[in-house]
Image (cartoon, rainbow, N blue to C red):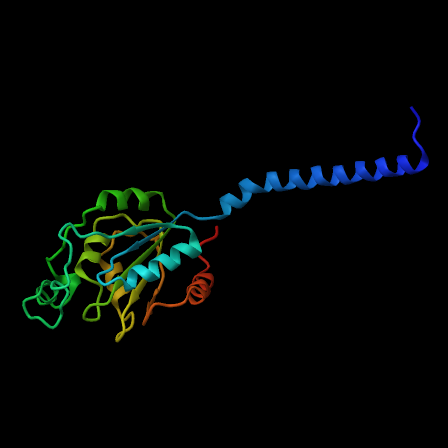
Length: 212
């Protein structure tokens, strides 16, 4: 069977095009495992009494695609429990139990502690979010850091407060946490309101912790 000059030219071009397609496909297939290895395993832990910290945590998850886990109190906090203006409320009694949560013996039990431990064990980066109560992290967040190993982890604290900033809350948590010399505990930050996704993305990009 003989082909005309135009047919030969057509098949030559087709062969070259197919060769490029096969080469491009091969390069992409081979690059998938390498890209997967570049992503660190991320867990976002948060305690949220009113939903503000939860909203921030969900935006962090959207950016990082990390595993989102709520820190659930075995005895859930009610709206009456978190009424800081009531001298007899649960949070007020926790606050008055010592000069600071770090020195208090009050440690609310965490309902899903086992699941949290399992997730953190596999993680490289652990975000820990909480509201600011009286300038500090709530007592239940101390229950968390005192009962999970953060050795060799990168820890990113974040908090929410309409009036006060991060303060020494993250530093005080670190003092009571189970860490090692290889733990990288970042300064963290406070959000005075529910930030936009763009703001969260910018913050996380500046951290430079989500890639190996």
